[in-house]
Length: 260
Ligand SMILES: Cc1ncc(C[n+]2csc(CCOP(=O)(O)OP(=O)(O)O)c2C)c(N)n1
Ligand SMILES: [Mg+2]
Image 1: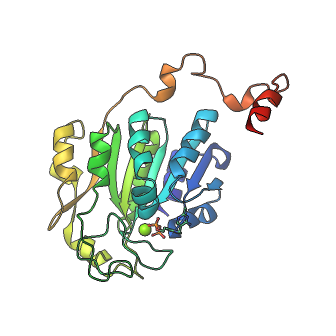
Image 2: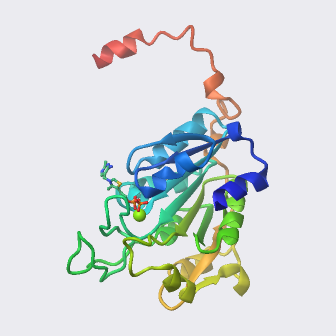
Image 3: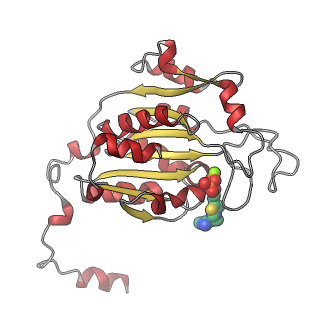
């Protein structure tokens, strides 16, 4: 709903947006929003979404991934997408559990979380995606909560408007399998960065805030910075829509032969 409201607020027409999802409960986004969609494979939302944006820069591209999807299988893609700074948005539905496969632990599950895959409780510490995006030179790093839909909508609007790679980690409690990190659990801890005068241009402070976890957990924009997008440094294709290039005179027979 937050995403739909963001699209309406931005006045984007259906054919101007493409969403890409991975595999998991979150992957159903493709079926819930009536824009162009590509249901990808597990962990590979970013390669697909970045490819679409590189091929056709006119499109607004938004990737939707799950926490296992992006922070387990797709973890390394995140750092490289963040530093590459292709102009797109990634929204991660972080329910801190593998939902679709019925309740195993992910890399953002809390230590001690007992699940089918961790009967004695999760042993290692959690990964911190927002801090990871900040140290990987992210230009837009934010965190939202699905229990505050209008706040989340405003984050999505700002993310899509940002010229560069925008990343939003969204706490989206799984009411079926995550008995620890529930809506109530988050509501008791969450506070908004903008209500405490956080300076979104201060990277050190952003990192300090991103590392905060326990009785108080911040949501909002941690950090925002303008930096040339990937395409700006490719003068020969900077303003070219690759999907419009002629293909009639290209002979790929020799390339195909190499692969035989
Ligand atoms: C390559 C590959 N490995 C494993 C799976 C099995 N699988 C299906 S969904 C899923 C992850 C679901 O967890 P998450 O990404 O957190 O999404 P959620 O269901 O919680 O939204 C996995 C591992 C798969 N489909 N493909
Ligand atoms: Mg999940």
